[in-house]
Length: 258
Image (tube, rainbow, N blue to C red; front, side):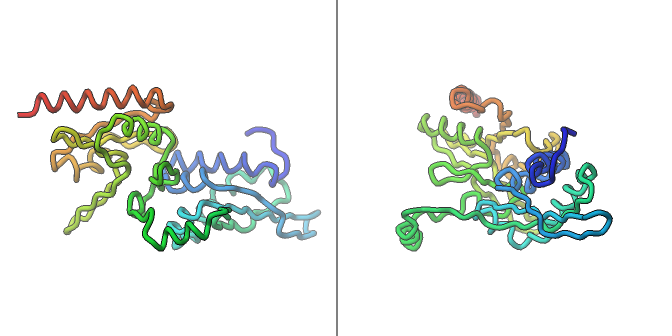
């Protein structure tokens, strides 16, 4: 571990390693929470036992949409984060970890009253990406939600192509075997329905069997599933190349259709 200083000074170092542990475990929800949080630490207690013992609490301000989504799970989430931080506490002598406090971020808007009126009028209301998910969509572009910058790059590239598509739609299948999926993109062109999944590097990767099981509610209905690495659209220019490749693939499926 790099040279440590005081606990508050090292809070960013600690939390990036906590996020890495959650990523190794495949816990996308915790990784996405930490990735979008403003994090700080302050001394909240002192005891003169054993030469002086200091207690520090950790404060995490997260985007309001994420806070509302995880509000019912705050106790379990703070417990998980506390357990992970504790694994890195050994270099800090006479230091105890206090509370983990998660709160919504304060957002300033000069037009907040007009925005409130627009909301009351129904402007911008949607259900895209709003279903409870273990991989929270925390980024926004054109009023739509995305999980990563590469997804936003591909969204812009597909939009420029004039193809009909849905970013991060929610598909449900009821019945005895209820299932839900939030694919990254669904494209519709010339009678072909194509699902595009952008695989990132920040969380535990699915095995092929896990990926197939998750998308089965689409593939069973004839939807074509294609997966691409996030590196393929890490810039807008690369996303344009991928968009061209996707459209060429759709044309190939069209020609081969019975």
